[in-house]
Image 1 (tube, rainbow, N blue to C red):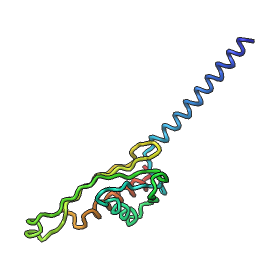
Image 2: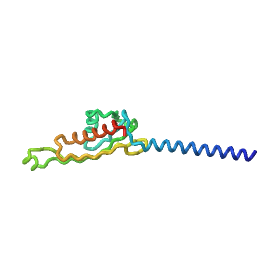
Image 3: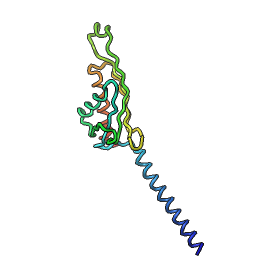
Length: 151
């Protein structure tokens, strides 16, 4: 009788270990999946220079298949960026008749639930006539390609 109880308890223990391992493996594969699904809710972190507004406009203009939300608690992903603009100098404006700026931006899209980076992109526009609009549209274009490719 005691041997039967020990065997039964051992069997229950083994089943619980297998079940928890199976659940851990399943959760791990979900968290590592870098895919950004169509219809994902994205929160764009505010930037001090207002660049988040350019990003929102670009995502809508390029018809990226996502939903932009203003409440981070409702989002699946968070889009963050670091940007730098360098306006044309007087020499460039005088001799080349160009007011084009140099734009640099780096973006990352993080899955809020898992904390994994699902998308990253860096853009360098050395002679940008549209400034921040150009770099934000480049980000939106590449994000759309990633979502539509399903990778």
